[in-house]
Image (tube, chains in turn orange, cyan):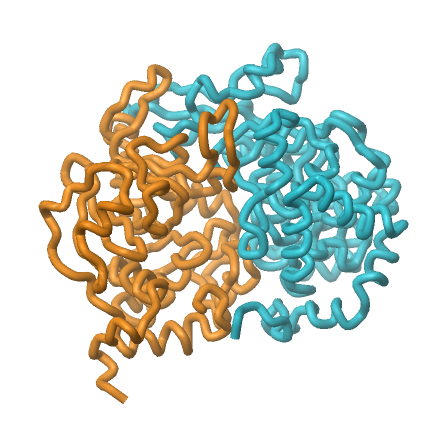
Length: 270
Length: 325
């Protein structure tokens, strides 16, 4: 067995492993993390085993700082409440934790995103005569609007990285200010409620971040991909002037933890 | 204390009138009052108005049967076991249902206002989204905000300014006070005290917000047993109007401490619900093909139910296969 802290070789990990590990690295020790179902759960649990042992996790159905023995399959799962400080409800999650300003980091997914980090999980096409309906917002816009940092975990496809999303379900950095609908910076919409916004988007090909103007740029490229390949799978002109290098692969320790501790049943992992 | 009004699932179904506004207990695929939801379909209700903090399998059972006219909520699906709410989606795409989208926090705000007897609740969550786009006020577009229906507010929401500390824009969300809360709970006492295990979701708020409350309990227990640990209870008997005792009545959704989500049943329902014909086949077999909840349980079979039964120490099943390994 190689040294546990060495990075695995590219052929030794799957795209989903890299996604989970790259997301886990976004957690700072001590962060209060609000996580959605799926990969976000793998990321926060892996982070708690590695770089952020003191991070705590809130799930929107009301479990606060749980220590699940078995991986939950959804945020309302009975497993979320194991060893929690509180098994409360949505009033505590949305008002007591989120609205009160306790949340440092949000881990969320989405179907479509634009260069400002506006996210759509509601419909494809015109909302008044949609071609397709997704699940709807859920807590995505609430969590994203009040967390200091949000990390979106998504699949890299041209139809998902759009010039303009069909419906702004969840707020990015440039937003309509109602009732006029004029597009302004998030700070102008949220006033003194402003706490932050999208900080990273992690896909199966790359890690993106947002500049001071709230525009997405390519930060690191996953090993095996080129900048050109990523631009090809992005529906808007991507800022590639600030690429900082390659995304670091998982370590052997990360892989061990993911497959033996976090998701041994293969619920989200293959 | 008034004596507990104990009724059957069938009698509970008969209380619900066409056009009534309903809300439910639970969260997505957990603690949903499925047995009573099936009964509403069996009794062929019409034009129901659902106000839900979030939707789930029960929503899809109702929507697929064509008994839903208005759905006000934020999310519907079957979590890991079915990624969309196919019947709600079909209702929106075809235009056969009125879908009013809010964010999760917004619907919580609406239910809280209703629960506390307030006309509205402020929130700054999810501002600057298309949820608040005035063009997308669907009940308004349908002409239903004219004040004739006392359950439909005259505005979807309003924006105001914080008058006290100058924090800027803030939303006011109108109260929701459904005609009925249909609430599946872990235990109810013989005087009506209500307990749910672990996460409370918005069950207490639903009970307080609704005009009338039907509790469908996994089991009825002596009230004194629940009063030994009052901090674990979420409502008192005087908040409850009717009680039904029906074990396994949240199936296929899960119930903390009693049984897990029936993943395979849910996956099968989800694939069936992708077409109207598929839904009808499911309904013919599992709703109209059985006369009542007891027959439904017999059809599921003892070994299936035993595999879902929760481990007494952990509160969920350790015997079901959940993943690929």
